Image (cartoon, rainbow, N blue to C red; front, side, top):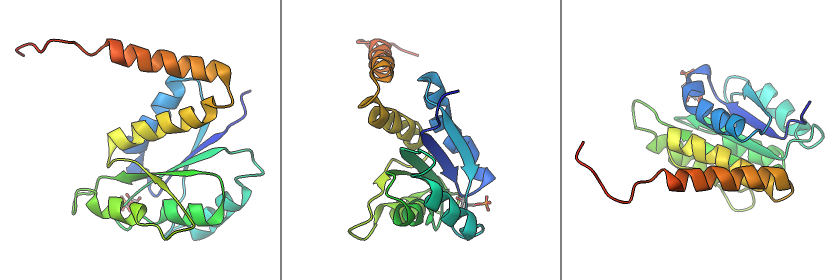
Amino acid sequence: MQQVKVGIIMGSQSDWPTMKHAADVLDELGVAHEDRIVSAHRTPDRLWDYGKGAVDRGLKVIIAGAGGAAHLPGMMASKTRVPVIGVPVQTRALSGVDSLYSILQMPRGYPVATMAIGEAGAKNAGLMAAAILANEDEALAERLDAWRAALSASIPEVPVDE
Ligand code: RP5
């Protein structure tokens, strides 16, 4: 079985429809991942244990998605040196701008690589994680190059009336 190198964590079950876009693109690229609910506010001990064990368990990238007062990515970045990619989940009250600012404005010293709000951000987080791993994995690099070429080829040159 493939060693799991990507951890996808999220603050709530309600984040999964967004974070699934990260999982799906990793599946497409043949990258093993684990998916967990880890909440900064509701399960702080779980967050701490996850961050503490991340290096020893062989995780190379953590994708962390949360909404509202989205402290999960930043807290995880404070607990482990495994790179954290943050995904701001779109919220009803403030459309995800709250999530974005909560994740983006880290104090110097503990970076989080922050993606766009919502599904596009989650998908890009998966692609970013794959790109990081592809630096040390030639077969994955080839699959990622092919994925990017296919996307490029799917874009028509001339617009049509719909
Ligand atoms: C955050 O609060 C979660 O990341 C989620 O985006 C948001 C709302 O959570 P639920 O009330 O839907 O569980 O911690």
